[in-house]
Image 1 (cartoon, rainbow, N blue to C red):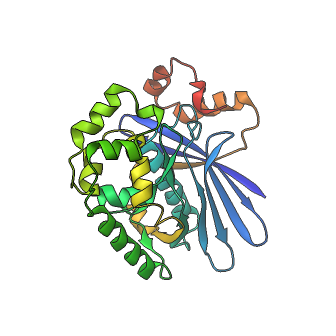
Image 2: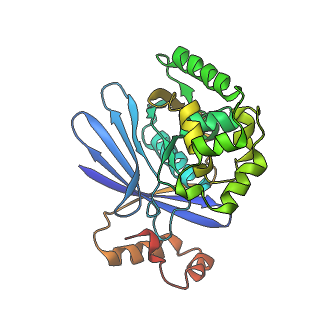
Image 3: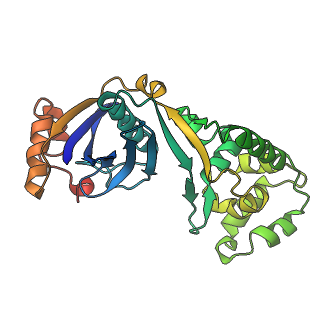
Length: 282
């Protein structure tokens, strides 16, 4: 059995629209939220014990209706509104479990563990910072140990000379441009800590520190277990609406839905030039 809904989230001077599907079988509910064809959030709720798992959370530009999903606050907004929907539809669910396997991809296509990098930058993982996530009971002690190890590694001094640093971590051809090498030379001082070095490069793409970070810190927090308590999300949601709808089957249905959802907001229609912006619906 399937049912469909739209979450309307008011962000500053515009609305975001997220399309959701609930499928149900004898044992569980499965909630998918995102755009028309691509879903960026997947949550499974066990009917017997209400155990709830955040199975998938990813970014894709097409994970909203009518307009592209922007990186940053809108990606956070997507999950917070999904969790708000869970709180309204499934009131017996008190928390969401998930395994933090998040990462960021640098311009050289290499990856950095997001929880580890976020600890280095903000002393909190990305989910702690944006969703007040807490370690699961089974992971709590281990995560505390891993965080201490990260802080210890961050405070170690880099003993290399500038030339040795360039040879070891920036020998790839991508770094041979004078402009890039000049940036490294301008921020690096021998015997500075890894934390100090990363802070100097925080406004640059992670390609500038991917290799040294992965060698010195690595993926210590990858695969750790966390929970998000639903009550901590409710305070964030102040202007969201949830509307039950019929399944969107054809492209023309999107246009009808847009007019139906925005009928009281002529300014929003004018922003789209009287038409639906196609970027987020295909």
